[in-house]
Image (cartoon, rainbow, N blue to C red):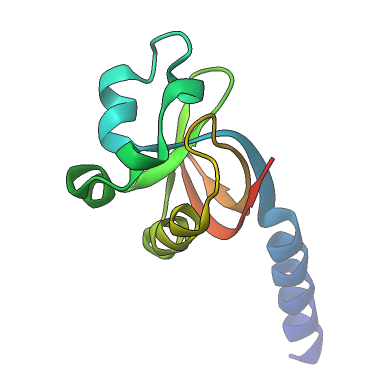
Length: 115
């Protein structure tokens, strides 16, 4: 029984360590990304003011990658993004590096940093 517990603990530790991924791209809200995310230059032109509009806040946030994929934030990540955006000094061209566990097109956000 002890061996099984040790094996399970080791497997969980390895999978937890491997789960953190860094995703880089533009911070976007999901409403605007769905509408304009495939438009050339959208990420660089997307503004802090837009990210703070009520409908945009309500839609949630994500990262628009260089290959035009949107990686959506989890609920806790959306809360982190609100605080991150409130503290931003930049008005647009908001490139970020987001660290967390990625599953499909979603990320459980651990950290958001400005690039």
